[in-house]
Length: 499
Ligand SMILES: *[C@@H]1O[C@H](CO)[C@@H](O)[C@H](O)[C@H]1NC(C)=O
Ligand SMILES: *[C@@H]1O[C@H](CO)[C@@H](O)[C@H](O)[C@H]1NC(C)=O
Ligand SMILES: *[C@@H]1O[C@H](CO)[C@@H](O)[C@H](O)[C@H]1NC(C)=O
Ligand SMILES: *[C@@H]1O[C@H](CO)[C@@H](O)[C@H](O)[C@H]1NC(C)=O
Ligand SMILES: *[C@@H]1O[C@H](CO)[C@@H](O)[C@H](O)[C@H]1NC(C)=O
Ligand SMILES: *[C@@H]1O[C@H](CO)[C@@H](O)[C@H](O)[C@H]1NC(C)=O
Ligand SMILES: *[C@@H]1O[C@H](CO)[C@@H](O)[C@H](O)[C@H]1NC(C)=O
Ligand SMILES: *[C@@H]1O[C@H](CO)[C@@H](O)[C@H](O)[C@H]1NC(C)=O
Ligand SMILES: *[C@@H]1O[C@H](CO)[C@@H](O)[C@H](O)[C@H]1NC(C)=O
Image (cartoon, rainbow, N blue to C red; front, top):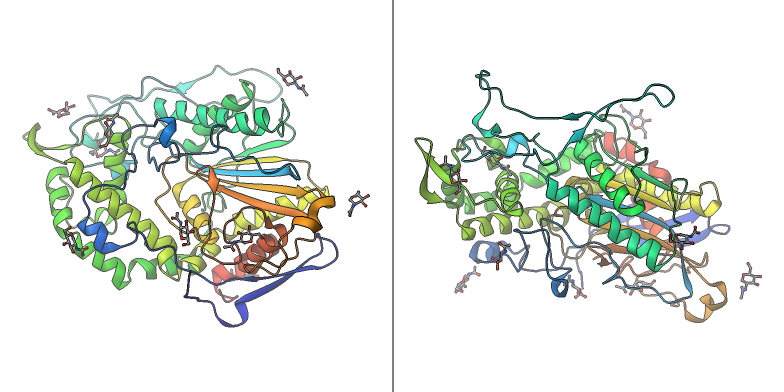
């Protein structure tokens, strides 16, 4: 059991009165930070000493059904009918909000090596870009065809090929479609929750990064089989809460403190031999700060290759492959480091909760408003679907204080399910003041949170195993951190309200 607690004092316990939930229902929750479980992932000694990558998958989007649920960087497990645990009949599903990372893609240009032994070709798909008046003339379905001009002397060697960097690859588009199909298989086919045509009751949201739109279109077709026009909600550049892209100086400073900490610096120091090996093979300048502040760039570069069945890179000597190559063992070391970094940054460091609750607080406040608006009848939307990034999912898992943090792989999914419990059975079976909460559950609403298709466990004792936690508890926790409808976030971000 967790023993450490931060955020002592006034902010420690939150008692939130919710006008929505039956005249001032009160729920006292613990807003403190609790450390994640101690595992191989967040033990630096074991990361340094290890050889494997914990059975995690990095080389294919598909795994046998028998091991579905295993961490798969290329295509993380998500809700699907084969594994879905249907709650007992007294719980009626009311509202669902899904958020997941986009699917597999090329690398970002910033993560490319200065010299590349092969290119990325994307001639097997089209990235459609066009505008069309809603009433009036039609547009051709135009798409971008990347190409490299032999006359253009400014083409960097890392840009060989016809892809945009980044873009969702054909394999990632297939995974996106299947992800939509699997969700529909549960929420429509199995539960009968989604009607056949959900345009009016479902909304889809993306970020300013076009790769999320590339995914959303495939997901929607995988769900509803439609090729029709479909709106994707999007907030303005620079303030979007889903990515998140709004500026939050307090959060940036906290994350910066985390990555300047002794713990963070000592993992980089301990990895100096690994860095020399990688720099030598890739041609990356050993003083390049982007590649050496964390393992992000190397991790992305190596994993994107492996997920697309491309070989690990070799050192190019006079433009020809040498026999000095990144081995699987070296790649595994990079993957162990990357997972350690995500655990450290988003969970192990006690400042992570405040860093994430501020920079992801607006999205969290949007979520609680969606739930309240559904219950009050202000909104009839029953399905909200967000396509986002690893930075979005990581912050959300940080706010939820997941018990074992990993680097959220491609397609990583968190699902919030709102249930109403049949009132006739509520009194008989509701846990009487469970130790993790003093909430009464008097509204009869409960929240279940699924991560990678399974119930998420939080290290925070008020949340615990997030399997039918009284809505009052969940709202009091989120409201306590970010305010009702995120009304504390602006002040917390600019330092006028204490975090
Ligand atoms: C984390 O620890 C808790 C409490 O010991 C345990 O119930 C849970 O299964 C652990 N989580 C994982 C993912 O192993
Ligand atoms: C590393 O592994 C070796 C051999 O398995 C073991 O003797 C040593 O104690 C380990 N070191 C750490 C820090 O775990
Ligand atoms: C992926 O890696 C695992 C473990 O190294 C290996 O057993 C498997 O054959 C690989 N699969 C593919 C498709 O390369
Ligand atoms: C890795 O770096 C190489 C070299 O610049 C680049 O060509 C390749 O696209 C990168 N791959 C990824 C997945 O970043
Ligand atoms: C280097 O090796 C890779 C993998 O075998 C191959 O795809 C690529 O064409 C080679 N590049 C050069 C320049 O020889
Ligand atoms: C939904 O579609 C299925 C199969 O096409 C059909 O059997 C069912 O009647 C439809 N339901 C509604 C409410 O339209
Ligand atoms: C359950 O709700 C119904 C309708 O709201 C109400 O008529 C009934 O009295 C309630 N039963 C209990 C046990 O509260
Ligand atoms: C927290 O409470 C919920 C129900 O309110 C319960 O299902 C869950 O097991 C509890 N978690 C812990 C860690 O006690
Ligand atoms: C800081 O946030 C508060 C909201 O709590 C807002 O009223 C104020 O204008 C902000 N100040 C600055 C300088 O952004």
